Structures are given as structure tokens and as C-alpha cells.
Amino acid sequence: MAVVPASDPAATRQRLLDAAWRVLTRHGSQALSLDAVAREATVSKGGLLHHFPTRASLIDALYDRWNDEFEAEVTARAMLDERPGGWARAYLDAATAAGVQQRDSTAEVGFLAALIADPERLQRFRQRYEHWQNRIVQDRIDPATATLVRMAADGMWLAELLGLAPPTGELRGQMLEALRALATPAGGPAAAAPGPPVPAPSPAAEQAAR
Image 1: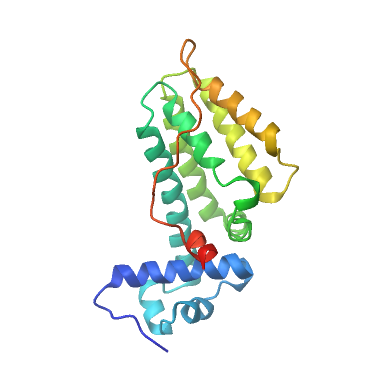
Image 2 (image 1 turned 30 degrees about the horizontal axis):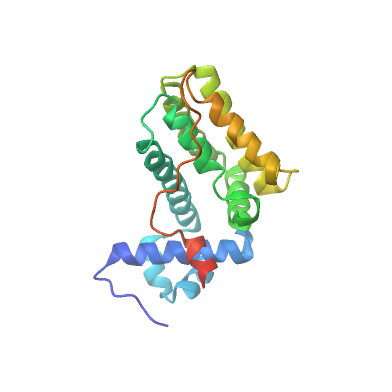
């Protein structure tokens, strides 16, 4: 089994996380074992244990990267829209960007299952949402309206993730337009969703492109 040179531990860590995401995507959370990730990454078991001594530490690192990437996308979109309500609109667009067909549901559902099963990990997830909520209510628009947009975005994400009769087609577009209008101050144009930023490709995107 090939071993990634230890001279670049950061690259090895990212390679392991990419491999873990691919295992999640293909087989779900039950298949996410250290042995499966080591095989997928073509890294020795000892090399994996150096970075992630337990399955829990691996899941925590995946969780952090998942949320960090989402927050980075929201921030990048918000930087392109400095008007009041820009962060709320950016949150809406980032949360709904994948759409019904493109969403990587297997990995994300597995993540949610792991969160629900672990109270400590769920608390960390709640703390991340509290941070986002604080950003939302400081977005220079009515805090209740901004929170409504955030919760609607979360609801659309969850409905699309679990297949809970999510709106599609023209109806989905109309809903997003109405929510953007809510997050746009009176007298200002309700801009269409900005083009997505160009972040580093996610593990799921890299897998889909192969």
C-alpha cells in the first residue's frame, strides 16, 4: 500500500478527508471506518492514525471542514454584495445553490445522522448556527425578517436533502425571488442571485467529475 510522504502532513490530512468524504458519499456513515478510509486514500493505517487516532476525530474534522466550506462560500458571496441584507441573501443563495438534483444527499444525511447520535457533536453544530444567526441579525435589515429568510433557506436545504416534497422548477425560482426581496431593504432592487464564487472544488465535486 502506498504511503504519502510525511514531508507534507497538511496534504496527507486533506487527502484522508477527501477519501473519507468519498466513502460517505458512496456507502453512507455506517461504512465510514478507519480501515475503509485508509484503503480509499491508499495511505497506511499508521499514517491515518497519526492524523486521526479515532473514528470520532475523523468525523469531527469532516464536520469542521463541511461547515467551514459553507461559511466561506457565504462570506465570499456577501463580499460581492455590500448592501444591507447582503449576508442574509448570501446565506440564502449558498444554502440553496446545489438544488434538488445536485445535492450530495448520501454524505450529508450520514453527517446529520452522526450529529443526532452524538450530543456533544450536536452542541458544536448548534454553536455554529448561533454564530451564523448572530451574523444574520446584524445584517442592517429587520432582524426578524433576516431570521425568517435564514430559516426558510434552512428549510429548503433540509427538504431537498431528505426529499420532503421540495419545490422545483418555476415554483422554486419564485420562492427564492420572494425571499431575496424580503432580505432587500425597501427602495432597493431585489438583485438576482450573484454568480457563485470560485472556491476550491469540494471532495464531492471532484468525485462527481471523475
